[in-house]
Every structure is written in structure tokens, then in C-alpha cells.
Image (cartoon, rainbow, N blue to C red):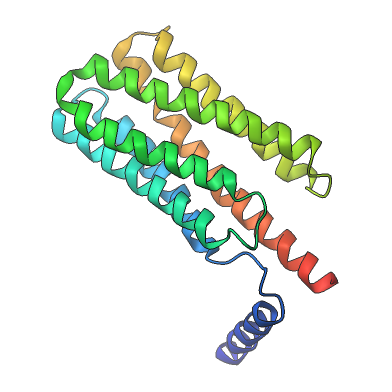
Length: 206
């Protein structure tokens, strides 16, 4: 009985996509991007007091993969989502800094921490512009979607402040900074679910 229910749901979703070719696709890729952020935060927690070039490259590799995931999601939905430019820009930002982390891991702990701070600054800037666009230009966006965008601005903005100004010291700042990518990853996953649901509801309404 359970298998029959799942099969009916699968067929219904497949029919919905066939009838609405402009529907967002590959939402799981954005979910994977959120998971990579969570892994990045976990790695920052884990390596805060035992940093090495290897651990820095691990963080760089995770960031690079998050960027690739974001860029692929934006590219595959370039026709379905007129605002996919944000996924492309965030993906590019993560990919570029992923490479920077890989190569700066051997240049010292302080330099690596500074690079993470600069990544957070650019992320916060992109997110703030996106949040204003969603609030002012996308009248159809729900209140939860708008709220999540602004929370993401706060999270990355405070992350940049904490890691660049280091009010609680270098090592402690890196450790607490791990909390913010984890929250960011959870928000990305929730935002993807909300956006996907809104697109599906809109497609059905049409």
C-alpha cells in the first residue's frame, strides 16, 4: 500500500513537470549546496584549535564544491527562474574562494582566517542585494522567503565581523565562526524547499 502511494506521488510530480517545463529543476542540488555549508561549519569547529595546511585545503575543497553546486543549479534553471543570476553569482563566489582557500592554506593561519572573512563579506554583500531585490521587486515572494533572505544577510554579516575584527581572539573567533555556515546551510535548504513549493503551487494555478 505504501509503495503504491509513493508511486502515485511520483507519477503526479512527473506529470506536473511535463505540463510545466518552466518549473524549477534539480532542487536537490541546492540542498546539496546547503549540506556543504553545514560541512564547512563543522570543519571550522573541528579544526579551530588544530589548524594545518591539510585542514585548510579540506575547507577549501568543501567551499569549492558548494560553489560548483550553486553554479550548476543556477545554470540548469536559467530558463525556469529569471532570478537565477543570484545562484550563479553565489556559486562563482564560493568557487573562487574555494580555490583561494586551497592555495592560501599553506600561507599561515592568520592569512587563511582573513580569506574566510573576505568570503563572508562578499557573500553578505551579494545576499543583501538579493534580499532587497526580493523585498522590493518580487511582490509574489512569501513573508517566510523574505525573512530567510534577511536572516542570511545577518548571519553572513556577523560572520564577517566576527572573523575579521576578531573581538574574542583569533582561535576563538574561528571556532565560533563555524556556527554561521551551519545556520547558513540550514537556511539554504529551507529556502530551496519554500521556493520549490511556491513554484509548484504557481504552476498548478496556471
